Length: 162
Image (cartoon, rainbow, N blue to C red; front, side, top):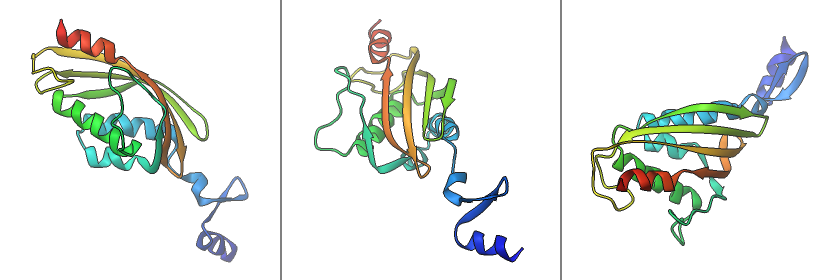
């Protein structure tokens, strides 16, 4: 029993008879994808921002929604989703499919909401929007550190202007 206490004090856990670093028991990548959807559905932008590491890198490039220049990727991504929550104040996000390994998670997200706020420069239309994104996150120490993805921004714009 003393050895277990010493291991715990050193940040180690016993798993399958072996001592492993406690960080190995951190939040799973699959849970991060679920939290991504939940924090947006809950409109909790602070909890959403907390999912990302300060050194987060967004590899997604979109001509329809270019990232702001001179702004760190984390700040730019949080601002993008804050704008989405403003434009779609009843936004709900669900995961359709999630695949994960130790350090990565790929997810297909489904977004639904009513366009009752300014969004992509379009005044509120009252239309219900439905669109998806497929995203891959690399997770380190329980935070999103890298992102690759494709969102259906063209589909969103088509629905807004229909």
